[in-house]
Image 1 (tube, one colour):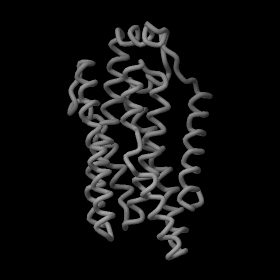
Image 2 (tube, helix red, strand yellow; image 1 turned 60 degrees about the horizontal axis):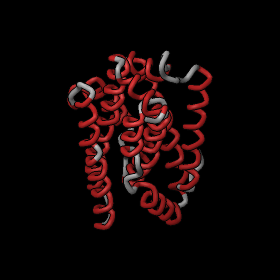
Image 3 (spheres, rainbow, N blue to C red; image 1 turned 120 degrees about the horizontal axis):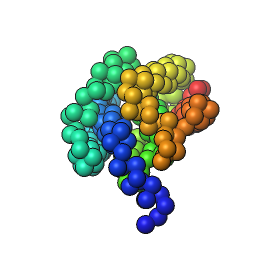
Image 4 (tube, rainbow, N blue to C red; image 1 turned 90 degrees about the vertical axis):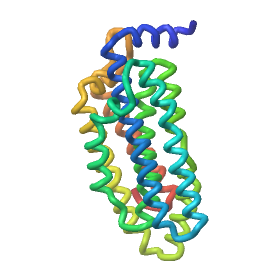
Length: 232
């Protein structure tokens, strides 16, 4: 057994750690379910049949992540609806506050918003037991958003250069709303805050480490915006 695996077994013996992991998997699962619902809704805004099929495929990919998350939650003594419930209001509020006005805003939200969430959860996953870490990383794999969104947004800006300024503002708003949501979720759930802080048998992040994490999140957001041809 590797040292990492042994550390993971020690962590899993701690009820507080298991609850924190169930919380984390619950918020990820509800995020995936919400992404599925949102993308299915966005498919109705698609200007072409090809676009509609692409968005529907992305929605299906998001939904496919739920089964392994549920399996892990059950293995840790939880259940999927119960694990998701504490985060429903915060995530639903985020989507209400960031409802896209058109096809292009929906594309930006799918790419930038989901990308930021994936980066955040990958950062946390680095401090978890190996099985949970690998599951989260797999759940955060790109569902085909990147190339499709970059192609469509760049083409839209080429057709109408004024679109770029509006979408850049939209991207900045999404960044601010997503960071506020992440901080709210962590603050409301003591188990998640403790997960970030670590413990006697587990590494964690101090305030400086959390600051560096948010710097990395901001840098990755800027990289995504640049790929889209937008200012961050």
